[in-house]
Image (cartoon, rainbow, N blue to C red; front, side):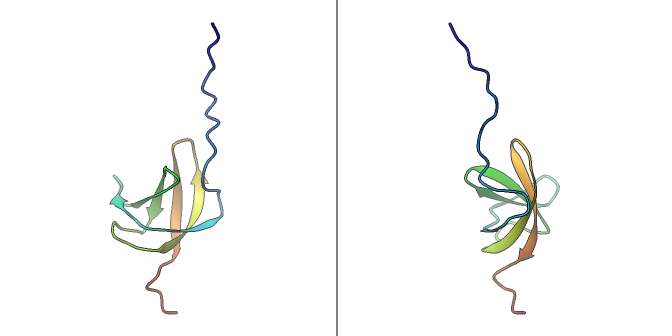
Length: 78
């Protein structure tokens, strides 16, 4: 019988350094906003639940989540 080891070859739906537009749906344990892209949880610094259509930049991607920061949101007028 053959067993395959989980090599965690899950392709991540985001890339470090790229920008995405997301809705913040929840608040994380440390107060950061939480969004999801393709099932991957993204912790967004300086965002809060209810923020809509904000542009974020991915800072890091690890096996189960990513971290990001806000670049701009839909309410910016500048």
